[in-house]
Amino acid sequence: MEDILSQVYDPEAFREAGHRLVDVLADHLSNTQHGLTEQAITWRQPNEALERWQFDPDAPGGDAVNLLQEIMTESVQLHHPRYMGHQISPPAPVAALAGLLGDFLNNGMGVYEMGIPGTAMEVNVVRALAKQMGFSPEADGFLTSGGTLANLTAMLAARSIRAEGNVWQEGNVRPMALMVSEEAHYCVDRTARIMGWGEAGIIKIPVNARFQMRTELLEEYYQNATDNGLEVIAVVGSACSTSTGSFDDLEAIAAFCAKHNLWFHVDGAHGGASVFSQKYRHLVKGISLADSVVMDFHKMLLTPAVTTALVFKNGAHSHQTFSQKAQYLFGQATDPEWFNLARRTFECTKVMMSAKVYVLWRTYGTALFDAFVTRMYDLGTAFAQLIQNRPDFELAVEPECNIVCFRYLGPGDAEANNRLNARIRKVIVEDGHFYIVQTQLRGLTWLRVTLVNPRTDEGVLKGLLDKVILFSN
Ligand SMILES: Cc1ncc(COP(=O)(O)O)c(C=O)c1O
Image 1 (cartoon, helix red, strand yellow):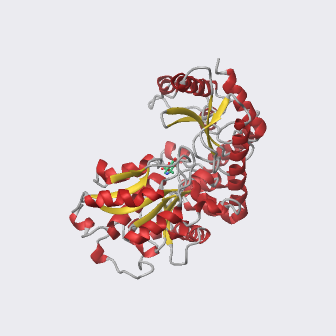
Image 2 (spheres, rainbow, N blue to C red; image 1 turned 90 degrees about the vertical axis):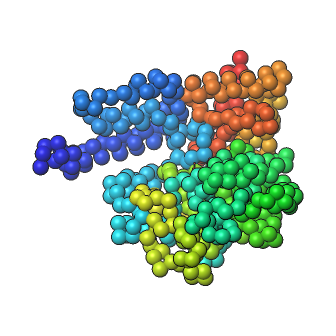
Image 3 (spheres, rainbow, N blue to C red; image 1 turned 180 degrees about the vertical axis):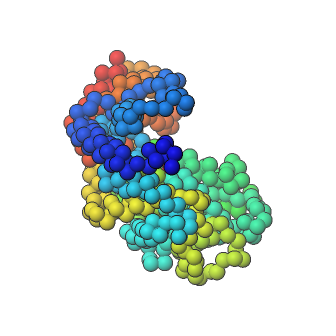
């Protein structure tokens, strides 16, 4: 074999590099989670970053582990207690190791014979999740690449099953629509547009003071839509919404969908994980009444991205997304080829995402997920309390989970405070000790945190409020 090819597959070089890298990562984990590393984020302007990471493909060389260490140091540190930005959890190291194994094996998960353990783990994980959600054994589904794609897949299935005519064959014969809270994640809006339904195809239901869908308005909006010639296919419940972490009343939506024979979908990308918390599972009461549910393991369940489950109440429906009605055998619990997952998923080659959840769940059990979700949601309440005790801060809404929106109240009017809070957030990111994000709610700019680190405590959160005050000047 040519030198370069034998070099790249040299087992001893791999052993040496792998051991060094794991040592680097373990030290980094210890330092970050104990707050010994300063930066939760190392901010660079985009163009500066582009230049920093330029390389010459014709002049290779250098030590790969040193390079990996540089990348690590300059990346966002999810294991840092001062990381509280977007909704993604610090991966459990064992789940990251499973990711390494999956990358190393590179078994594609579309065709059964290319990923035998991966496929079996995937189906078992999804069935265990469905059971945890309270579904009957008829439920089934699969893992897919992110909540965005999973929501689209669910809506394609809903259209295939509920629309008049054969959409797969004939396309959209009639104008169709789905109904969803105005606070839903933007990917639901995208879904309607991707399906060719346009602006009219996404009916946004106003929210109440707690940013939950006003379900009492569903009937009126539905009647208006049907009067205007729209065929309403589905209602999507948010569990929870992205900006404020507000949970829609799933039981009310389920009752409405049952009355009108509509598909009931739950976007539980973030808060679907509540089913694991004995203390907080009441937030998603009614989830098992849904026809389909999306849940991201990478958001609230310590799993590397992207690992998303799409569960169907009637497992047979999961086979109908990409098939014509005529080809489909109703009433059959599973397709005879249930194990060839590409028949049901967008992906053809799919990474072995199942190993990450499976190894984690099998090693530590459901108690791990309960402990994590409960602790993070509790911390959301504790942070809200801290904010309420400070007259110079305002809370957008009492949090239902681990997403908290708040703002510093300066002396100026609402507009001045919008500018002030946006500036504070910018300086916080540039400073890098904390990583937080921001959101807009009813014309106001809010600072927003998602608490995802078990080592974030009230001391750290008080430190954040102090930082906000420091940067308000
Ligand atoms: C409620 C909700 N749905 C869907 C998504 C999209 O999920 P993903 O980033 O896995 O595509 C998000 C992401 O924040 C979300 O909060």
